[in-house]
Length: 110
Length: 110
DNA sequence: TATTAAGATTGCAATATTACGATAAAGATT
DNA sequence: AATCTTTATCGTAATATTGCAATCTTAATA
Image 1 (spheres, rainbow over the protein chains, first blue to last red):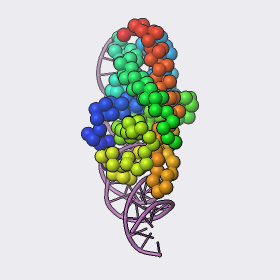
Image 2 (image 1 turned 90 degrees about the horizontal axis):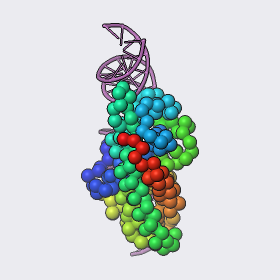
Image 3 (image 1 turned 30 degrees about the vertical axis):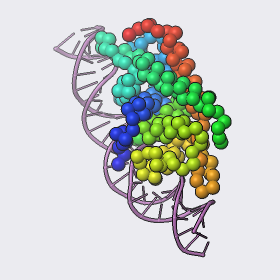
């Protein structure tokens, strides 16, 4: 095995899992935080920020892009990356909703 | 390789990555949502809710527990599971902060 | 005390992820 | 055109994850 049985779950559950999984590696969290820190999109430079080899970083960027967490646009011979707010809004919304619900039913048990 | 180089990243980045990774599988998202939906801690019953075999569910529960997302207490011969709010608060806080920051620096590029 | 029931653990096969060296692709620079 | 720079891709090794059948553990119950 080793393959996730996505077909048994709802689209929403799969969507959240995909986003969460993309952030499930510290290098990718670090990339997101770096893109946040600098005020603009970043062309180049990301590789130098991380303690990983260039192909590894490239791979992580690809995964973030596939998950929809970042966007990349070609800028001459470099590539500009920035955060895709839509995906982060989805996550923020999801956890806000959950926290809200938990707040309301506090101390029902445990 | 195959092993994440956690030592190169900050504790906070690793902590977020660990939580996110735990939610990076639709079955685990489904478990969390089920625990939310029912109003109390749940003893038993979780296996029947999921389209996966008992050992698989048990493993997913273990991972959620290791990540700190749920708590489990022994209740006779069954086990009561419920959400650990602290972990969810951490996630909610994190994404709220990020969304906030993104709001402020909107349209700087791209 | 045998039996049942709920969960965990073990062991294994299939697949995925992580990491990187080598190399390729494509625009910029000389 | 030759070279440099930046990023992607390929190939591969090491490790992790997913899923389940079989089995074990522990407590409840007959």
